[in-house]
Image (cartoon, rainbow, N blue to C red):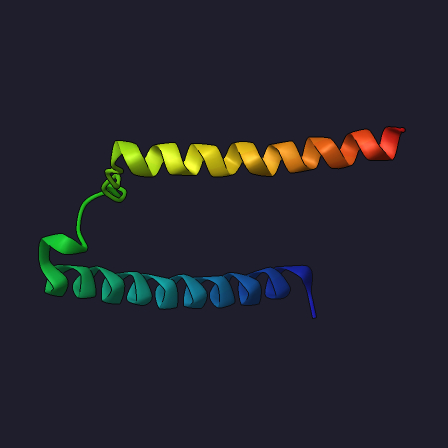
Length: 79
């Protein structure tokens, strides 16, 4: 088998794969259009969750307690 025949066979195989991928892309786009605006456009991210001041303070205190426990363990390990 010559190199030219091998290259042409590989080219046909790649063109077939390209055609299959284009069909799949078309199907995904059609599904997006079917879902409407909720699936279209770019990613907008999630809304930020609003926390009350009390909840933020509670989280802060808990984090400080966790770090204090870690620091206390580190001091014991050094000693």
